Image (cartoon, rainbow, N blue to C red; front, side, top):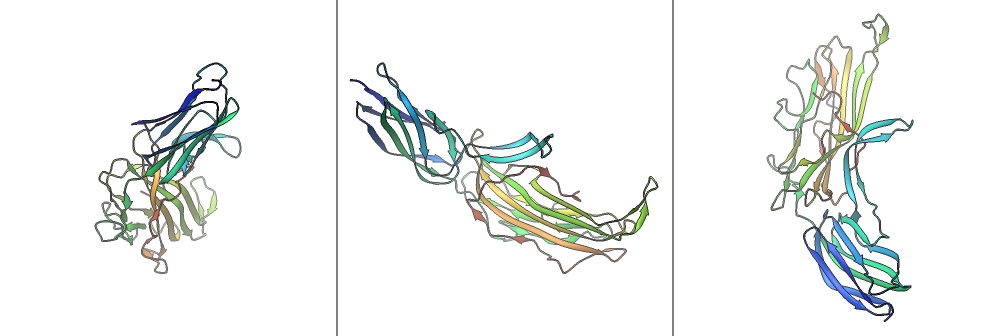
Length: 343
């Protein structure tokens, strides 16, 4: 019979292949699957619709995938060459999610990054007759989460702003002066295995200022200059991405200013704001997905007295930690930074 043949949909999740085979003749066909398949967030999916010819004259046109839920193609990060606003090629450390992928081929490759019961449908015309096939997929996720209770040892705990013991060195920090005392501590809980989890720390904004005496001075070349205030700003990835989350994440930020009194510094301030992401992927070749995020920050100021640094009590003396956010948007950055004054 003209137009006779068969069609099937493969769903390859890199571990199992599910196949539905449905026969048709010359009439338009609609064959929803009664099965509900399961997959994890971040699991790369490969859907393929095949309409093999059963005879001559088979013509497949207008293929289209209609995919429900929140999908992502990949998350890319690392050193990339890009063009700046002046058209000059520069190398930057970039991290971003790529959401677009082809939907008008006979196959579609992607991952879901949010949970839900979603519908996947392929439609086309075969010999100018409408045809479609569909199935449902339940997208699930692991039960990892940022432990929210600040009980001192577990969960989220934060230190105090401190000034190093001798005062004159001008080291302002969060936590304690000892290097092994964390300033901010975040634990991960709630999953049988910690494999596949990673921390991504982002500096959303960092402003560090040296307030100077505006006095004239002569530099090594004999030029007369003025000591003006110095402001340092930064935003981007905080050093490293996807630190293994098989344990807690801690940060002990510091701001070290020049020694007194020869530097001419009248004061110093720091205002750092961070967002820490708990990420997950189900395998080395899968896609990173954000599970949760938490924003936190600290700020403090010092004044020259003039022979010793004195903390300014008008600034907050403890960091601010915002509530944990479930299902955040993807992190992104265009450079990797280390804040000025970090030893």
